[in-house]
Length: 297
Image 1: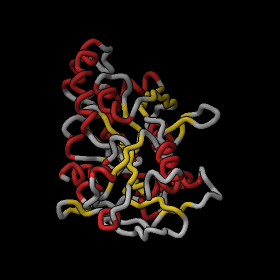
Image 2: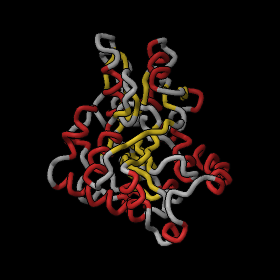
Image 3: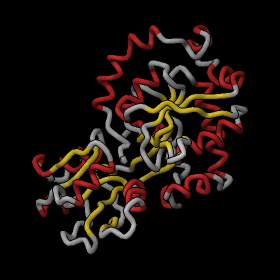
Image 4: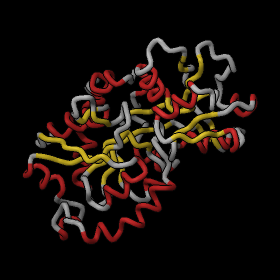
């Protein structure tokens, strides 16, 4: 989620359902300031804390065994918000599909879940520039007995593919020739791995980052992650760019966040924050990788 950096379909439904909640909820800013796109940053500074939404999905944003909120996005949030004068980051766990709805219903101030930037999501929220750019991969049995290396291989070889519920990879698989009957949807990484182990699927299709993280939880077991590849859908390369999501009214908060994120990138300070969670230099965005670019699709 894995990828998922999951898709927008269910979120759109939840978003419309959450509209009454947004109207009834407490505003994070003064109404006049919010209308002009200001106030959220100062309010967080005055409070000394900010609340992020996460989906309990490693390695993006999750609680560890001690109950601490961690992952690449929360740890990056702590660094950036501290430099903005906001010392405390707290979290609200939500199903991935409900993150955008929760944000716009003001259950939290920012989505810190490594969410992929997509044109559909850009209609509902404002994204920061990405903190990572990810490629796809397969998790397979050791030795890769089915020879699954490229995007089209599962469809051509008629194998069964595991994807996560709400994940972009389901669409990738369908458009790459995998029959719907050969696509098994799992609720989370753990159930996906059990499906692979039980032989219900021949591979799991997620981002390389997610699969590498999943593999660390099953050291010594006969599975491996293939070399990364970039899916091409409808003639376009599908680079998954993960970013923080903000309410569209919170321009001040987004602008300040992007400024600090740019400083981390330029000062080569971003990778050390993400590296403990399995990210490499290959996933660090370039200057050309902006939110505007990925919002265009």
